[in-house]
Image (tube, rainbow, N blue to C red; front, side, top):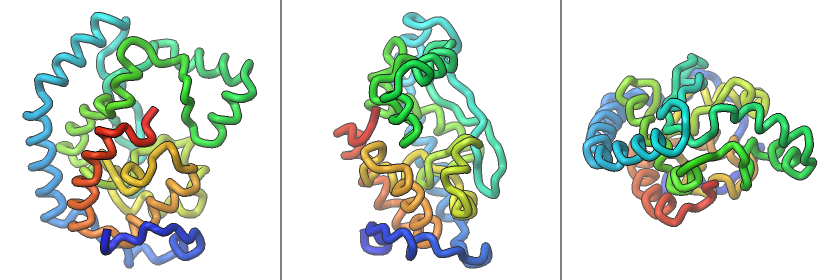
Length: 227
């Protein structure tokens, strides 16, 4: 990518800057891309989303859509949507695992992810590997909570991992895809994920968004860093 620096010198990428220097992400062309892209993807994936909804309903008790409060631009909270991939007692399963399995506890502390996650049920593994669980976030994009491209939306507890660099995350809208997703995703460290978000917030442009969208297709098809 020509205008995004993919090398991640942490000190260079994360120098504090004034809020006024951030590139605005709600320019007319970016919003137009978001709306047109979200509508097009909803039409394209409507049959797939219906099949996913039916599969979840038939294989796992509980709601079809999982809703969770995430942090958006300027630190505003919003309700983020996903297809439910976990059991309804997922939190209890997680706490039991972390209390009894030191290896899982270390893995969770590093990335807030588990390769062998006991919470996932039904077709959850397939949905996560294919990233199809995130399709409901197209509604978040239409609502204006998210953009097609940006940092992945985080929960409140993750702000501690960003530290003082959370200001960069909050400078842009969270995205359905982003620089982190096309640069290794869960195969990278959380620290590098933060660095990618900082780089995008500082230097990302409309045309970088377009490039990232095109790069997302092979990344999703090859399931790079997804679990």
